[in-house]
Image 1 (cartoon, one colour):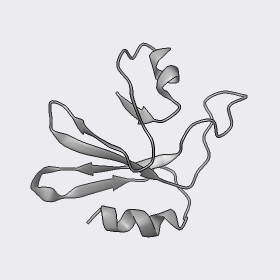
Image 2: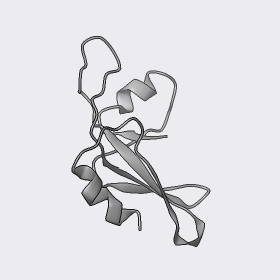
Image 3: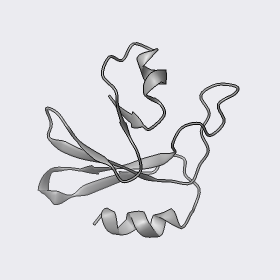
Image 4: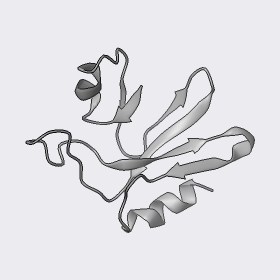
Length: 91
């Protein structure tokens, strides 16, 4: 399981045994598929409970797929200058 930084405990409490937390611009190779996943900035707030407003990182994901192509998933992000930084990383 790969998650944004600050959410590892939340996932482990729900039964996930191995959780890799990523901070902005960090990446990990996903096995066995061999895909590379990178956590990138996005503009949104986070909340998992009543008292944890913005206690974890917010971001999107870039997956490097076969043939050198990349897929970008920003989730429910609002427009932000981060897109100017993320755009070149998807090429």
